[in-house]
Length: 92
Image (cartoon, rainbow, N blue to C red; front, side, top):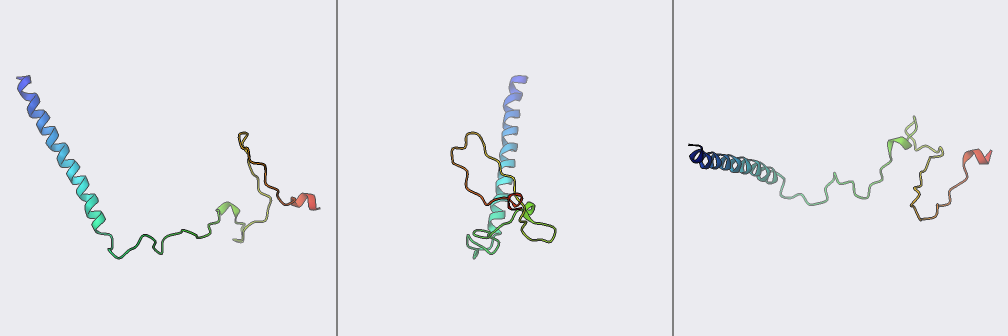
């Protein structure tokens, strides 16, 4: 009896998995068809080439801070350190 049930269960599970796969793929195809046809790759939402400031660099007034910033170098970094301006403490 178990020998005759396995092919039936296998077929049933295979059909259910195929149905689920087709359902998921159809949602993807429908979503792709909903995009406007006249949109090109670069849209007005594209931030390519725009300047981004990290929030940590902005002071309370919304301006870019001029405080000294902490930098980190890793031991396997072979590039020589870039020269920086003297800190505000050295100027005083």
